[in-house]
Image 1 (cartoon, rainbow, N blue to C red):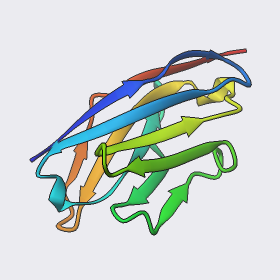
Image 2 (cartoon, rainbow, N blue to C red):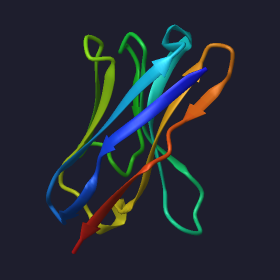
Image 3 (cartoon, helix red, strand yellow):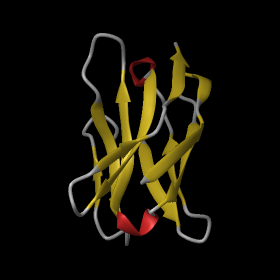
Length: 117
């Protein structure tokens, strides 16, 4: 079992920056990828950024490329999503997701990011 605790987020103005963090616990050795998804009311949850356990593969949604950066600090067992040049359309609940080699997915409870124009 894997538990994910998100922190960060909040309110920012357009053009500003925010950072969200995700700290996994439990059977973290089973995780082979971790990342962020986001969801707004009435829309499907979409992938924002993912990173493999050893950091050798990173994926970004086209909408955030060049503005968001995902990184991991293995010493702190934490994954970060640095969000720069924020736009109002980035407003969403951001969820941390961890995936295992066996195909299991774990989700955090989500953290709200609101960008005002």
